[in-house]
Amino acid sequence: MQRIVIDTNIIVSSLIQRGYPHLIINDLFIEQKFQLCISEELLAEYYEVLARPRFSKFQDFFIRAEALLVEIESKATKFLPAITLDLISDDDDNMILELAHECLADFVITGNTTDFTFPTYKQTKIVTPKEYWENYRPD
Image 1 (spheres, rainbow, N blue to C red):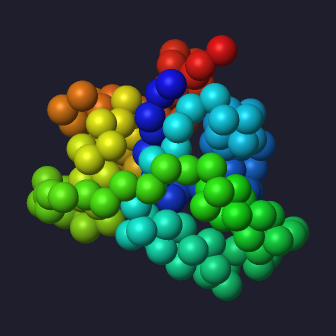
Image 2 (image 1 turned 30 degrees about the horizontal axis):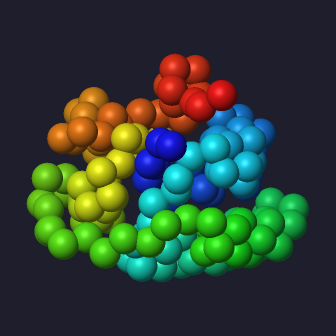
C-alpha cells in the first residue's frame, strides 16, 4: 500500500472544490486505498489552518473540516520524525519532508510548486494532485 503525506493546501482544497484534491481525499483516502502518514505537527497544522475564519464563506466548511479531521485521526498512521531539515525556506514545508523521510513515503501530494521545486526527496516523489491522480493513484 502506498504511503502518502498530504500537504495542508490539499486538505483545504478538497473541502472547497470538487477537483483532484477532493477525489484523492474522498475516493482514495476515505476508502483506505493508501496509507496517509501524519505527524503531531502536521495534524496540528491541519487543525490550525482549517479553523481560519476566512473559510467561513464556504458553505458548511467547518462541519466538513471537522468530519474530515475525525477521519484523518482515525485512519492515518502517526509518525514521529527523528530528523530536522532545512531544505526549504518555509519550516512547514520542511516538516512535510521530515515526515516523508520518517515514514518512507512514496509520495508527497502538494499544490505548493513554489517551494517544492524538486521532483523527489530521497525515495519520495513530490507531485501535484493532478499528477498523482492521473499517474499514480491505486486501483
